[in-house]
Amino acid sequence: MPANRRREYQQWANTHDAWVIEDDYDSEFRYAGRPIPALASLDDSARTIYVGTFSKVFSVSLRLAYLIMPPALIADFRQTLSRFGVKAALPCQRALAAQAQGVQVSPLSSHYGGGGAKSGLLLGFCPFDEAEIRTNIKVLTSIIEVQTGA
Image: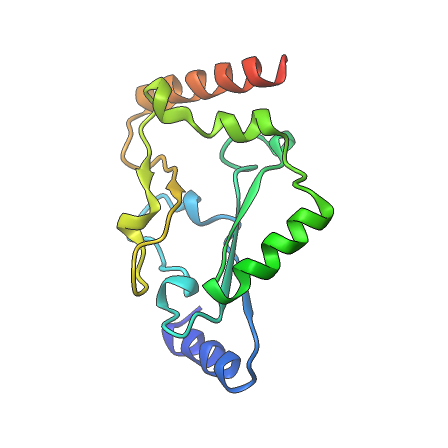
């Protein structure tokens, strides 16, 4: 989506006291050129909720996703989680601690474009050659198998 159209969405959200939900389902599958910045990274007014998933990176059956939300929504979201519970299995969440096993990851905070660093983890494949990707996949697979008993 062109940059001016993205700004229009942000302006609309500001004007209407609304939220923009950005489902960035395939951003990690860009094979050439610079990645297109997420709308959330351009949002100075904190009106964008960024949704992502690990299903395409690891496995569809993993069913583990994440939200990066404006600070104004965190308290309500925590209350909702406490009422309905977390649906992601703890072993699957632990599998994302792949760095302890030698898989390279980087903190999301170094890529954050807003006013102040945010916590998170960025997993990618572009900086690795094919052999490194295969090795990392084997490590991640073994972690998931141990955690899930598969």
